[in-house]
Length: 290
Image (cartoon, rainbow, N blue to C red; front, side):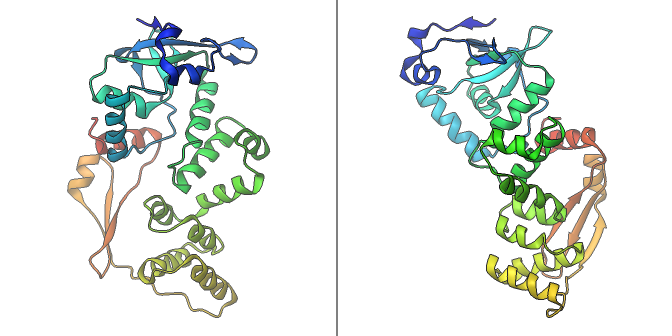
């Protein structure tokens, strides 16, 4: 059951957070938020959560902080028709609190339909400092497509100019392998923005491998791209290596898993999914939640 938290018990941190204005917040001219203590068992995760990767190290650090100082920033939830609560924002705080055995968590209860829930989750997520460029680009894309915002509206809500938003969105035109490399920190957004100017996917991948092999800087990558477009640089030969299906992994995940290897002994796993349902099932298996 939700228990209202008395203001005197908040402490300076939460009192400052609430700005001494009480529990209600305004949304569309209505009072839509209430500050309470909720049982963790009453809360379920947000199905529209845009963030898909939670690093173990960061989660452990948050758990340690909560043990020492308590939860400084409440989570935000909405009440469902069944009387349960659904996360709007704060899944990492929710997970950390659950991991250390807390029974209750401070929360704002907000009124929100599915569209508003998605928009709040996306906007809250995009304000984080630890997002990789592709995660930012995917969040921008979802705000444009699922929330039906224009690029101008999106930039205004996020305090970003149109060019910045467009530059991130263009990263999604890169080959998926290059996007993955950017997410994992093998190349920077600067490298990616240079590679976007190479229209052919094979050429993109060839230059990507050259960046990794020769540790090219962004400036060097720009020069390679310029030379390639001017026809002065031959396309680097990409070691195609081998590509074969792994029957054990394919059986484990119930979808085809390809193992691509190169002559140097490195390589990658390629897992293709047909739809969101397959992706959700795959993610649960990878996270050990199935």
